[in-house]
Length: 195
Image (tube, rainbow, N blue to C red; front, side, top):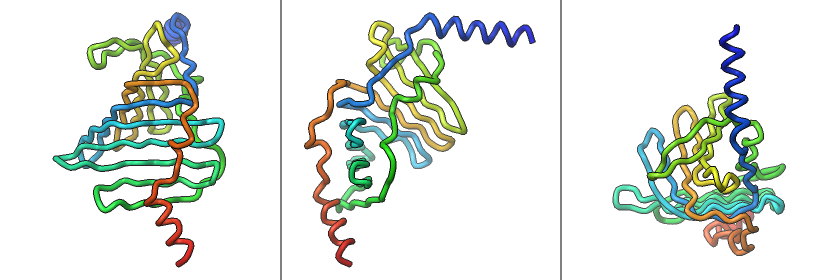
């Protein structure tokens, strides 16, 4: 019992010595991505923009796989109650699904996260904060001098892992043009309406 109390106090003291990140939910960013799943490892780059207040978000990147490029775009238009997804080589195909409620928070987990120490990534040391619950784990890496700017975000599930490295992160609202519905999605939506 005494060992448990000492371990808890060490965790509290360790967390108290580090500034808890307060990363904004509205941002524009340029990212490198890395995904690990049963089909293999996938690398790419693109953008991830979120306008939390206006209920819109977009992840748009290109994955480089064995000499081919795969376009991945997830346009979350909760303001219109729909999410559009493109995840294909060619020809371009768009699917969409209806949604309700508010767009998910990206960094809201930090309110309950614990400090996990320093971790090296790309030859730099980062302060890592994380949270694990129900088979899911999420971590963010920040610099000690700049705790409200994420450098990486890692999400782990039982069968896969997603890693986002923020090459650029700006806490300004993204331009409206970033949330325009792609042509493939406009066409597929119209076809579905008139079937």
